[in-house]
Length: 120
Figure 1 (spheres, one colour):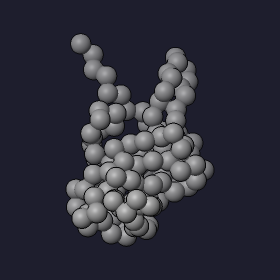
Figure 2: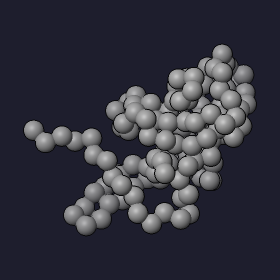
Figure 3: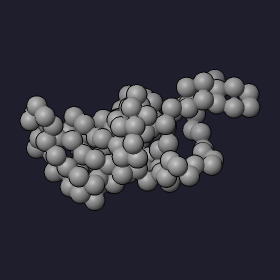
């Protein structure tokens, strides 16, 4: 249904991954409607936080957030979630958005792994 996380260690029969909900997880993200770019961060809960949004951003509740492809970790266009709330950061210099992920992390059974490596 959307981005789950990133494999950090891969073995022959198993892999260890960091879920997007983990407080240490980050992903470069984009508002699909406005093309505004920010950073998705795990919060340790079922919600995600999109930070570093420009104050002039036109982000709205209901907007779809996707991966931006910046940073080279995740390909562009993978669905992440939907904006549930928009607010001002404490420093009042930028906006943040609470994002409800499309993935139901408590019910995950199988995931598809996409590799960025190419065979030479």
